[in-house]
Length: 246
Image (cartoon, rainbow, N blue to C red; front, top):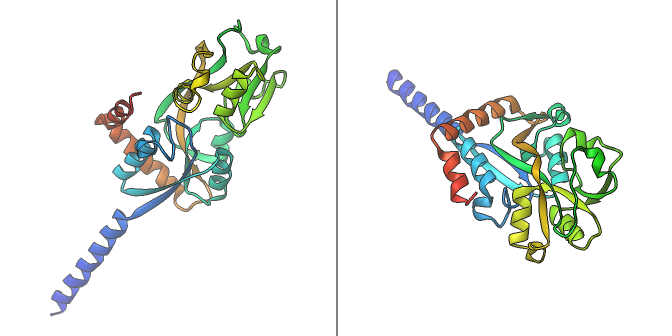
């Protein structure tokens, strides 16, 4: 009888433990940044699908909330959310957050009006121009620290493209895929008038940033990286990207 009771208790404990393992959750904050991620995109966009699948492989369920990027950064830093994505890497961010392995690259470019002849070899060549940037965005260390440039703040990439179209600025620094998506969807008026300067300023790696204020953040980082490695190796990540026509 004692053995039977012990076995029942052990089985109940095992079921409870497995249930807890299967119901691990991670809260994620993100922004509307098509085509990478967006509330109205299929599966919230390909990066949301990649991040969710990587966590799923590691035994986590994800809860995703959308908000402006500046709030994503502050809320994750304070521990209101376990993590945020998709974030460019910077040394400053690496001090404030725990940063995952990279799960995709994004080409960062300058956009201009097609009827304007603008080229450059160094950032010094861009001194005469008004350049649109977005609040809270990280670009490149060299660009972000270039105080000699005329940088004009806006709340979104789309706002900068519209300002560029209306000639209120001369250039805007933007992810190439994001610009193409905006011009193909919400601002088609600018599609024939705007174009990017080749080659890209930089290929930016995208990451998940984890709050150091959140419990077990180190374990979550390790779990995500492990899950990411798995979906890269079995081709799932590539399949997700291709399904979103990228």
